[in-house]
Image (cartoon, rainbow, N blue to C red; front, side, top):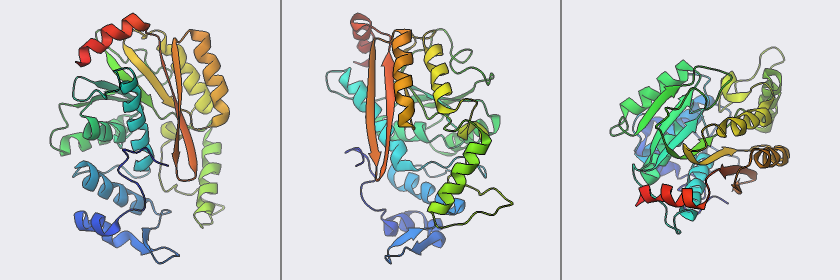
Length: 309
């Protein structure tokens, strides 16, 4: 079940989406039940659906990404944003802090800039999006510059070192109320390709023996895999977070593989995180979760919250 504030409850209203975004019409087909849908195995159709959803629900009039870059399913991304808002509310007497005083760091923003777009539209937060890929950052900047009112609230910054996450990225005087991350899932290109083939078969397609399938949601190497996969990426993030613990109130990351969760929690205990939260999320038959942690004690949290008033 999606978060109660998620705008994407139930089936997509294709009549409304096509009315708002006529470019989607050419991709609408009837599913086996005779209901309007799209071919989710077609990357162009998925991009068109995302473009329409962002237009109708979030006022994003111009959105596009380069071919083969990650095109994320919006309802699940929105759930992460809403659950993070709840986390801030728990630190603020039950009230979600809104507006540009709240600053959020998106680790690995990608070409789609989806978390900053959703977070600003829903709660008015400001964002810094980081990435190691200059092509992705250029695409994200194009989205930001093409939509009114985003230039002053969504900043992009390149992490120049492929081996670092926070180190070398933040200025000493910067403060962030949240950090979020959708880490690379796989441990190798081979593993990512096999996963793509399984997903294609799940969509009723048979990939060629001679050509790797193009995953409907796309994804570059840096978006899909890294050495050691999700577990190693999060371990590094936790370790680096200890060096910038005074600059971020709540660190967080998605943990897609439930089997990685015990190791994540052990690493957080090892580095001395003072408060650790595991938040479960569900989108249809898919279960996911994120882990959040802070190094701030009660008095430090109280002093930090004073900026939200």
